[in-house]
Length: 191
Image (cartoon, rainbow, N blue to C red; front, side, top):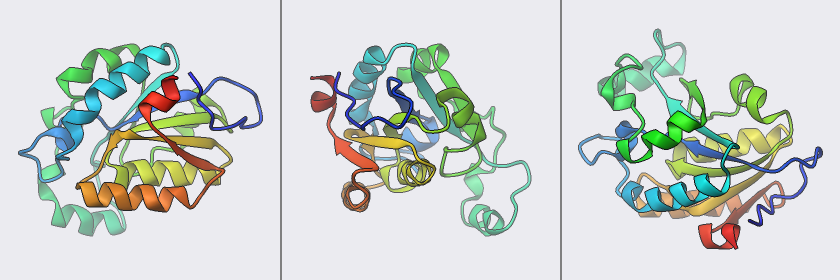
């Protein structure tokens, strides 16, 4: 496994972060469902096997009491204002065993880089990001982590966008941040 995000300062092996593999982002019935989600599942599984013991699964949930701009957000998306135990926020069945064996970080924000993730992976880790959606939670996590000094690799074919065009646009933006953020594919990473 290459994992060539570079040395983030402490020389540790990279961590795989599987961002928000939840029903709310996978189901075709969900307003937030990605049409690309099913295609990434086998790649995420292969990567999780390669990163065994160094996998974090994140979950997005609605806050109990939205604050600031989140109030307007949930006025626009009321279907998502459910308890975090609601089936919408469950990890998809295809990846449930992965989540059971991984560290799990649950946040009410798009970006998952924060105290809970740092506690697991360290302050300036090497991160390999997969998940959904490329144009929301993946890009938000990548930018915040890179800003904090993490070396980030985004696995382009193991991420799913809200649409194929939005996925491509997010990858284009992420490519502007090299060398802090690099793009790769599953095959390249596992070679």
